[in-house]
Length: 213
Image (cartoon, rainbow, N blue to C red; front, top):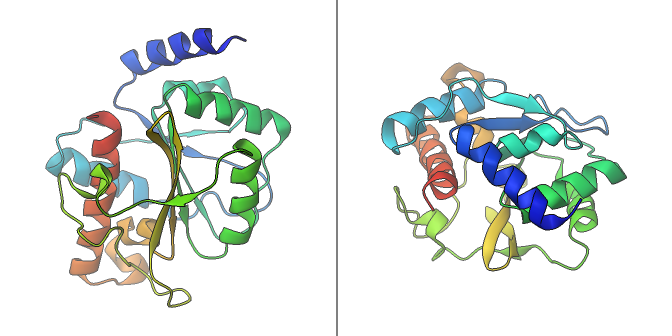
């Protein structure tokens, strides 16, 4: 399938589903279903505070499915192994280079696996740390130091890595931050309100970047 046709198909999809997001269901044994309350909570917060109008019920899609082209934003999380098939890799590459966006949130333990899979999708592109000056950290909420720290994990500083294509950020990998845990219902992790709000605000920035840029 020619890339130009893919772009037309994608643009046609997002014109009718411009305020839809989806959770990526991947193979390999990792718990793709982790943090079940995180996306609904993030959507609610973003709709109330960041000028989005996203469907309150996120979809679930598999990486090889053509359905991913109906969603401008895909979210992926988990603690363990990730395996993308050749069909997954080809479809995700086409999706991302045709206007889609993938946020991968390491829920602790995913890092060693997901980096290998990202390299398969983009063998000629390296993950680069996204500077705090990037628009994704600027609005509607300001994060002058970049991505916030939500859970300690290994005690390392939180980092936001990205893949850029034609000067556009198309993949965001949040590491040592664990935004998704901060989006969960309060009783799940008992995080203080201040911490949860930082996570929700950063998530709202990500969605704002996708839908308003």
